[in-house]
Image (cartoon, rainbow over all chains, first blue to last red; front, side):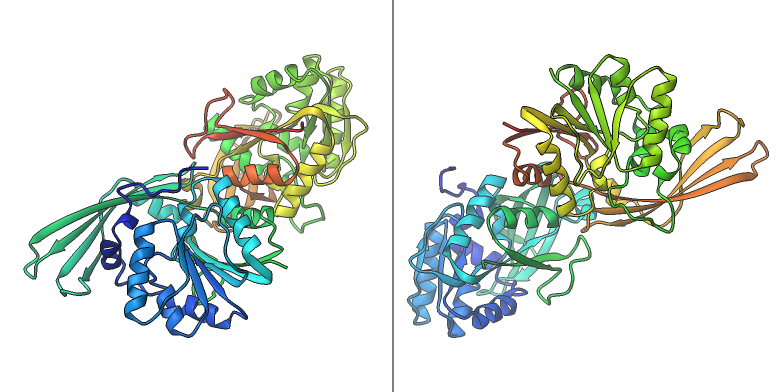
Length: 259
Length: 274
């Protein structure tokens, strides 16, 4: 197995920066909190990060545990939880092969974290571990992007202004730049990112850089992975509103059941 | 090869779906099929190499009118064939007889056929596997082929890799894909293809019209066909081989054994039964 570490330039080694970069994102929150509330038993979040989803789920009264590969992220989550009066059971663990202290009715992998698994073997080890940690009748829920061929061909190697938003504490402008490189045959995206901190006049004060690699998975490929990992039923949607998967710009939202 | 082969690819090689569609498949018109495709030879050296290296009998799954199989037989290779289409096989037998070759071929669905022997190599050429439209079709075909291999035998499968441009090029407009000369009438044969593509379904439905056009540009004959193709990606194919019991596999990017690095390459897959 690969060493259970993040590369030093991945975003997860700097939880404060991570929380700023994704402070604007909440499109998946209601979906995952609702799924957790509907679960008939405890919930486990794989790759829980700094608790963007896990903490609101706790606040919704759900019995949820979590793990993440990056110790700094887990520490940051614990500190944020403590400030809100929670002491969740969270630990450092690797999706590619983990054990959990109990069995769960629901395991979630939000925010495309499954895409950090770069090989079929890593994907199967992850799905196998999740299946083992689910109660009979339990559910896996996760989301991944579907590869848009228009985006892959148009954006490959180009530096694009991905998003502009306000710093969650200072209110100053932040610009997120992205230079993606797509390998269409190995199904990987290498993303070089720059976080540009500006002042009110638009002048750049600071730039932070990070990068990561994601592996995309096609729809039928995922069905084969779930089948190979021993899941007995599955369903895919084209978004968090559970519409059908129809376009290659849709988000793939998956549910799979252990019978 | 590229232009001609890509048209041929869309017409496909055989129809695994069975049944009788309202519009015929290209395999219902074997003579016309051969006018379009029998001259294709871009893959023949590869299949001859595979068959010669087999050290045992070879089975071609989806042998059609024998474009590949008859060349193997002519080279002295011990090869059998199976195909869903009785009219295609009838033409194959006719061509074999005309060449003085003995062809042992049977009608059968690649998802569940029975041949009397076991083979050192099973080959599936020219995107025939794209006629398996569902995961169940694909797994049934791969399992059935594996059952027909001797221990140590291998399946060799050729599929075009589904490129980004396949999905980005617009659907719905008829495209003149191919022109050739009719050997008897001397008229021009035009192959018009109207494609309807479902990117997340990895599915392509082609309405094909073959027009015979005389010297004055008048359409003197027209035949319409429909054919479907389900495209497969690399890791998806590895999972299919894994789930259908193959113990080892290797995915290559062309007939010269080159690595698969770009999405405009041909995908050659080996799956071994240990």
